[in-house]
Image (tube, rainbow, N blue to C red; front, side, top):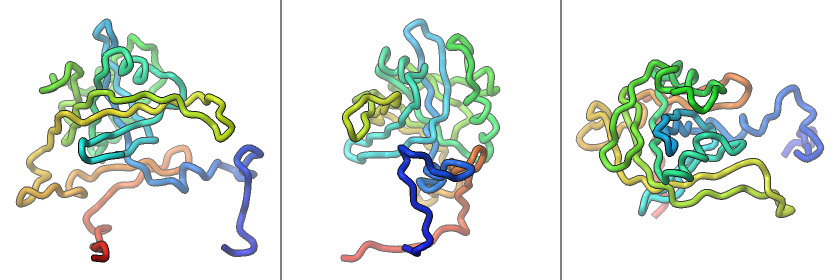
Length: 206
């Protein structure tokens, strides 16, 4: 590390124009989550703290800053869907991030179509090229190193149904870049797109 490297302790502030944490841990896949409350009202919201955590069975998860509608709905019903955020749906995904009242349907707000799922009772975005239908496995309130509860909630779910647009399959192999997925970067508005020209091959040592 260079001797002139910028160092900071997060608890004391970063002393920079913008917090670099999210830019460093990025770009990140987007957890575009649909859920439904006990009264049947739909919710659709993107979360930039999202990833996969296991493959057998497949487990995905997202973290919410605050106990938001998505967390509340999923704890109430035990179900949610994840939809792949792509360049074609970027504006709609962004519209669904608006801070609105619980009774507002973000599908309608973003001009998207809710489509009935095959395994669970929560609908998904019809326009999305990849969808995971999920059943909640755990919700965890995160803690600091001192053991104090913080206002962040981790939701984990097992993928019980997968929808893939056949246009994204080539000889049965899923083509990651074909859908032009977008990922969240740092800063107030930075996103990145995966494209085929960014691909390179690297195999694990035997």
